Length: 515
Image (cartoon, rainbow, N blue to C red; front, side, top):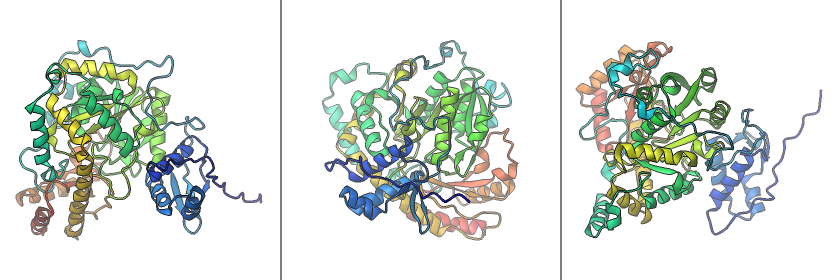
């Protein structure tokens, strides 16, 4: 029997920290980069937090927080009684190549941006024409289901705690803008968006999400849905295959179907989208994913799966549209770094929105794009709306520059956590046919399993009669899914829309309605 090799050890030499900046973030980035570029290989043993702190002459708390973030993102793992090790990462076609933590600022020589050139010639396509164009592009009920209107109530999905928004501050900033507006801002604006706001968004993403981008890579949109639609219009030609998570965000699927894409529903497991199924698809041009908090299952995509997905895009020349719709909401540690932060080949388009932090009616979102795509996206957007409404962009820029946005994000995260806890504590137990509540580490909603579609519909009807709003998981699946119907059943509940007292009242009504 060959001797057992001792684990590789980590030498902290070479890690230089600037004490004028956040030590935890710097250490996290340094260790993360060494894992990605191969200097720290899988199985390498890391020093105990106390030892690493002594070696770097920093506090142990800084090391613990950096380790916690690396644990959360899947870069390291603990072995009971044996310390901390670099996690086992998949062997992908990019193994051995340096993976940058920066979004690509361009494309390698000879790589075409590959924007669709047919969008100007496309006829207007009605929903009915899309539905009947083929089995892979049908949309349920012959139309796109619109979000519910009216005031928020329990347990509406996709609505943040906008009752906590600082409207007085916003009103003062808005009044100040209009009291003496810059005449230049009242002319036609840049279709990519207000320059100051783009710069502040880039700075926010760099500091809070680890996404190294510049203002020049950002295009402002009228919410996340327009950002997704732009991706569909410019990256998809009629007949192209488009992979979407199944179950998933149906409005995104609709946007790609309207652009002529042939939808392929790819199943989601406990680590995210099934990359083996994705690799088996022929002629798939684009994958739409929600890695930070899968919609609607709530799964957080693992690091191994993220690397597999990036390898697929690099191997096939495909695009990845990353919708980070509620990435600010993580309830232990810092928000996870987005998929775009791992992209080294300029294949990820990052979709962000202010609607889940401020309020949906704001209609303000953005795209972070590889630099070579920015001009094409800005020109295409100018055809639709010329540019975004100016005062909203200017006020949001001032809101961010004065520090109000960052404070509000922290407040919203605390509120969502409190409202989540009330739901988890008061949920009716022992309901026939209903599974147990999942652990909820991120996002604004949760999904609980139900044993059949018939039972799902019964529970939703009884909840509606009690004036409680619940979505059925079965409605998030593509009609042609191979998953048996009863395995698609579940309840999707948003927990952030209303205060704790209203959540408790709704839970009491549910307990009576469900008996």
